[in-house]
Image 1: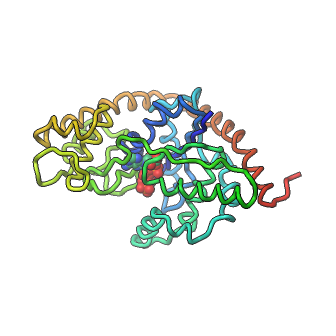
Image 2: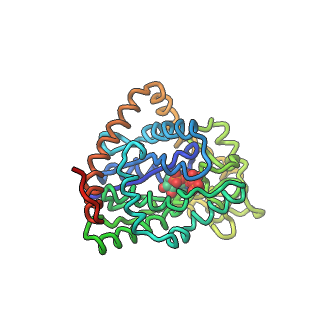
Image 3: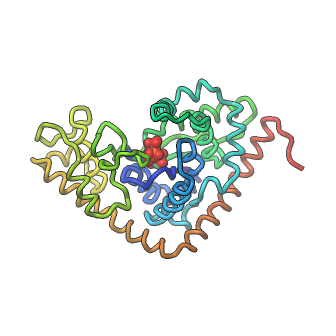
Length: 332
Ligand code: AQP
């Protein structure tokens, strides 16, 4: 059957963007149609300035939210990346097939390294090699499909290149995966800056809806969303990014179509009110389930322990095969 791998970084509290752009698809579609693995990619959270206790706390919270959102351990594998050594084992071998030029061309590296430099910090070497570790995450499991938002599509492209190259040079070892971008709300934008992605690690929080925000805060953030100077409700990402973002969020929450929804509104206020209502409806069950899971930490521990075991069992043979193919002496 199809194998799916996807991950989420514990770099901040999960956002509506993470949910509509990724997690919901994992819950509603992926875990049912395929042998799916969902990973809290904590190693990736160490590539930029981080606070150890916060990363640890967020890893746990992220895993708990994935379960709260509806990932079912009977249907899929939920685990934490650092619990499975195969990721870093494979990453090193893949580094031996990738070039530094390839890494420097990654848009996310360019953006994030510039940001780190601007804030006076150094650029961690792991930020440059991050896409190789991500390739290892995917290739270790022989994933056929990688559901991602379009911000990650370039990294999946690189993963394909590395897999094809390895297979050509050292013999057929890896499945060549493909990115699958969900059709609606593939990219939720920041409510205060609708030309930028709503990202959980961003410092300015006024335009970000977090899954665990209090309902009042969610409503306030949406009602204060930046719109454009016009007043006509049309769906046009280029000229009306703020309104387009609200329409896409509303569409994603209600199952509608953004352009068609636009025709129903004659004022920005009404659109915002309905969007806030729709978002709150989507978040309510998730918040309730999260609270229940927080009251049962042993259950979450057990899910993550079993998940890591299952993941190890799948990844081990592929990573061993890659070690042999590239010329390493098998361990005795
Ligand atoms: N705004 C978004 N709209 C749609 N999808 C999104 N994803 C993230 N943001 C949006 C998707 O969520 C999955 C997990 O991605 P991540 O942990 O890399 O995302 P992040 O929230 O963007 O995290 P950061 O730390 O804030 O990332 P940077 O620093 O890159 O901005 C992915 O499938 C992602 O596409």
